Image (cartoon, rainbow, N blue to C red):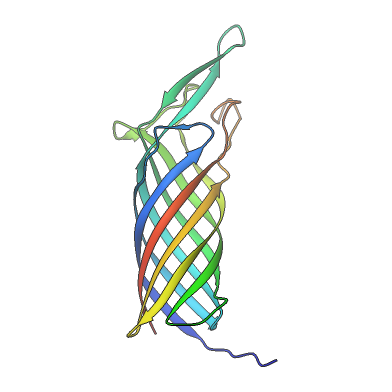
Length: 191
């Protein structure tokens, strides 16, 4: 077996759409997302990528609190979901060609918040509905090289570990994790 080490470096822009999903999410729709990325390829079949993406989409969440009799009271909180996330991904290219399919896995942090009227929304227990959460994701894409440029289209999903059932500092006992569905277009310059 011969191991080919072929170092290449790519920087570029990415943009697309994402939608927030989850058991407590209501009224969600796709919204725009934009970011920057940097890829380092060590072999023709393996690439490491660091990216930073921000986005905003329409989404509300159910929030719950306990009344004085211990019964849950629910309400809808927020009009929009905003996030800024950074991640490290590993892309595997099983086949090489002008356009190459790939599988991607990633791990990152997401700074997120539900917004209402331009301000961070309050959960029913009085806390700001925002957080910094770890996420784990994966997806697939198609990448091509055109005259020193890299173009790619990918679909991914990220599972956000956002559950915080702490009543005093979190969002109550009914809070659950969320996930996103993303469709992105990438354009980069290879060096």
